[in-house]
Image 1 (cartoon, rainbow over the protein chains, first blue to last red):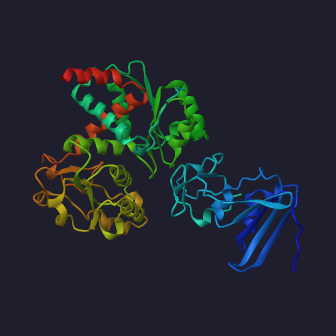
Image 2: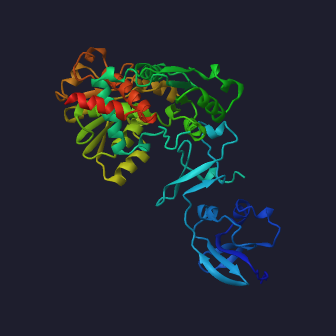
Image 3: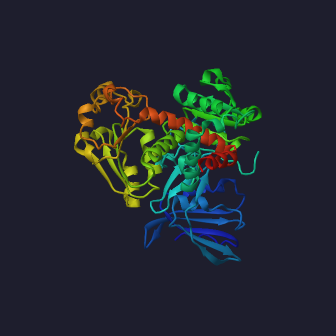
Length: 147
Length: 319
């Protein structure tokens, strides 16, 4: 049994699909945080079989969680203060995401003007479809991981 | 920059009511063109065309000249600062210092939107790659409204390249906001309308059919929108040669059409409409070009907030 210490203030991200924790680690910019971050991979889960967990010691207003919903809105976000869970935050698909995914349409203006931010908007909430703000190209899995 | 400055990136940027107002201005220009001939005195339209498009550019320039304004610009990227590596954002910032309104065509999708986001003057998307060509859609809508009297309750057949045809996709999208429209898509299997279009129609409960033979549906159509099979869309020359003359609209086929079924085409036409029907009163594709001019004139006036005075003059004269 692996024991990870309690955190005083921050987040515990639970029910992350096994193998996706590093992706979230990068997108949340956790590598730049000067605080405790625990990455637990392939933890046993009754519901999921295997899951990843992230424990992040940080100011609870300092993280942009929009990207989490985009990657996997089934993640449970536990907000911790004084060592206790004070809130379980529901993840809602963001209307717009900037700098998370990249448009790979070679005909898109963002393919030649490098300084343009890559912005995607939620075009179909039911089907969870995101499209490039400039060319309306549909996002596909291969677009993830630009940064 | 004006507080309420608007651009035209996509026909759906304007509400149905706003489009009606725009088309009213266009129809008023058609009837009372003299009343508009000095409306834009002292105004300048910049036509920034990063790829050649003679027809669209001339239509925009004529529109401004007929409103009494002047034009400047470039007709291909080679003669602009883009050749030196200037970004679209910087170009529009500079153009904003020279002109009052800008029509931009660019081979890259979304370029006019980037320009609009940095511009101090209204920007009109005059075509961005295979993405949008809103003034063509406005032209098509105005033509239908002028010939049919309204933008609802008709059956429209769209024929030819429904897979790559940007004008077709944009027109279908725009027409879904009106009631009582039935679509008939006529194409070879290889050039069928994309799934996302039919899914969108399904989700809105709009009726449509997909057929291969044009003859079978001719008697039921109120409008027939023909398209050209574009060589540049094919990777394989053999496929292009096989499909390019799949549909040829001729007198024989027109014999099955209603007396008031109008033929539209975004032009240029190649072989898909035989010249033998050019004199048929139902051949509306050259009238469509004329409507394209009126709608661009109306759009320039609308984006420059200069419609009301003349509309009132025009409408008063009718009584």
